[in-house]
Image (cartoon, rainbow, N blue to C red; front, side, top):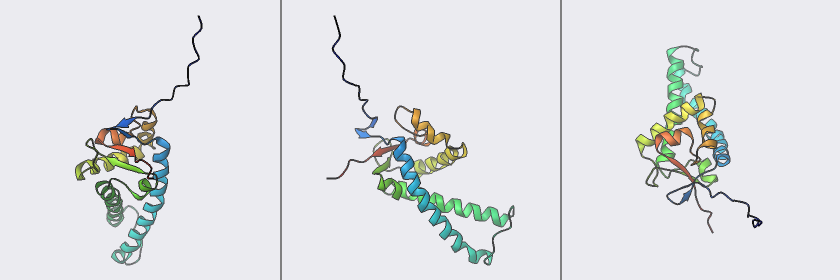
Length: 159
């Protein structure tokens, strides 16, 4: 007795509340867009900081340099957390139809978005290992999503 040929299995995409979770390559694409945008924002923030320093770069290792770094970190924090809380997406995520949601399918609140930001920093500090986590996670969630209680979902295509 021979078995009938089996159709190739097509694994269904991981879901959260019926929504398709973002695949790793889409995360990378959105990060690429956001990287270009955040580089521009940081350059503008640096330009706006020049009057504080009299137009000079702070001396490396000084308190002024530390203050400048904290200022830039604050700008980056406001950029990401602000976008995540209000609509659940950065401009890079918008371009790839991605949205960040909490367990109820809504954009994360301040606490959850702030925790995700801090964990994203940790994901970067480990040379991207926290992002690579999504390749092995059954729900395609990165380290910072898993431990902040967020999901990155793919929005349906319009039309």
